[in-house]
Image (tube, rainbow, N blue to C red; front, top):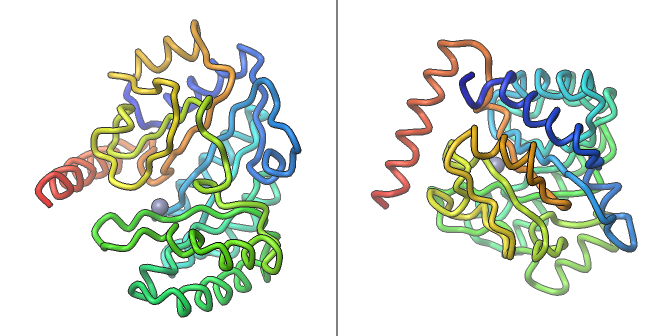
Length: 254
Ligand SMILES: [Zn+2]
């Protein structure tokens, strides 16, 4: 079995399910006063190829798994029909923002752009949580716009967002497993998709990850998945593999 296919993704989900770990959407999780003892949250960053997100959402629905899809407000990803279809399956839609990069670092403009794009999403579907897009080749960290206390309060109180997934979750005892860099060694090629966790969640291979999920599963897990990377179509899989290799190299050379 090759990794980064719907087949391997399905085997990960089945291993988690067979251990009795419940799946939650981020909005349901963030609305809980105390986090549950056991959980798995799957966060999809839809950076490109929304059709791949639709395929993953369908697979999850067939397995009885709920998750959250964070969409960028860009022409290639903001596809209302796909967004509505994924929401109708019971998954959460969130806003994957890059407003500070779009505003080239201008905080005030960034908040205005965020509000404009959030309103466009809410015409289609409810939005309750949000996550930043990394934009690794630009110098801005999009989260910085909410590190200003007044802006963060505005996000929660006026814009009615339950939370920003990087800033408003305590990751200290959560295994944070992510496919960034097309590997499961979260620290290595990862510029911004990082959290402060005390749990080791690095795996050398698909087999190592699957072994852990089957035999030694953490009680608290968050997966970060980029659906564009995952496909059973061989040519697309190879193209994506080459692209991921080139991106990793570009990040290393910077
Ligand atoms: Zn992203």
